[in-house]
Amino acid sequence: MAGQFRSYVWDPLLILSQIVLMQTVYYGSLGLWLALVDGLVHSSPSLDQVFDAEILGFSTPPGRLSTMSFVLNALTWS
Picture (cartoon, rainbow, N blue to C red):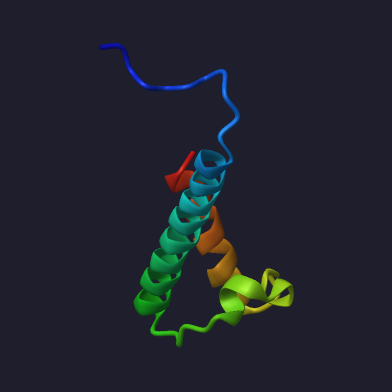
């Protein structure tokens, strides 16, 4: 029997599940990179590192660490 992939049918459940999966993988791996980088420099982890736009600058050490984690995460999944 042939495969059951339906390339001609719009499947909203499949699209939504793929979006949720990709976001979960992205933020999960970003969290791992942040934890690893914070552990290497003995810094305290914070949710502001992920969700605060002001911390993503090179002027402060936490900003450099967060930016480095974002770059490592992008390179991991490229």
